[in-house]
Image (cartoon, rainbow, N blue to C red):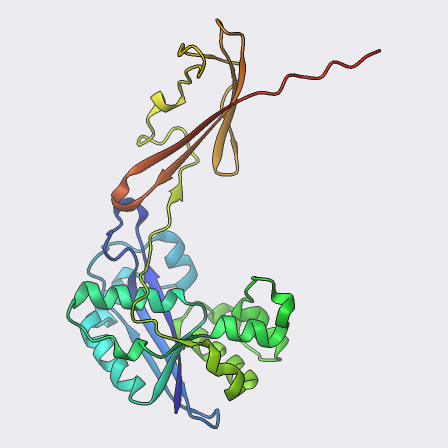
Length: 286
């Protein structure tokens, strides 16, 4: 049995997100371990982008990857995945730090080749989940350890400046896994990841000057009489929501209002507006 620990770097432009494949893989890195927990091989490929013509600034800062490098040194995704599947080989369990990489790998495979066979994802394990329970046990309480923290706890040295390179991250994850590997305990973490979809998370807009924001949403009608209310003070940001207090001139009712602005698939803007009656202030007896 072989154990393949892989890591992906991907790019996404929120303003021009592709709904069927929101995250485009730009690098694959992996290490292979045998049943004796000896590293027997490594894999690293840069991938030439097709969906997005720019690198998101945050992705560029984290990975150090530039579009010019990917265009000159990258290979098509179809070729990269073919070589990766050959590297995985038969009788292997594929693993990554968190399940998101498996979902993104699946979505890229299906986008670029809808007829692709995903048999290599049928035996998959979330290394992060396994390591977290191995180190923290029941104290984990749903929290997941970062690969850096897990490496620190297990005494594995790494160069922090080299992190967010797919092969480097896969190597550190693999070293942590090899130190903590117990066959019987590991078995229950193996699942079929060939059917897990990658979903697009809504992105909150926190700038009211954004041209995509419909200012009419912030006009509040009284739920009682239907008239527009008067704003007692300007809208202010609290987390991802805008809050304000309003009063109805006719009903004299006071309301607390909140508006959350979310960017969804296909650059669509969604609003979550809530209005609730403000509690009357308690009078203090003197």
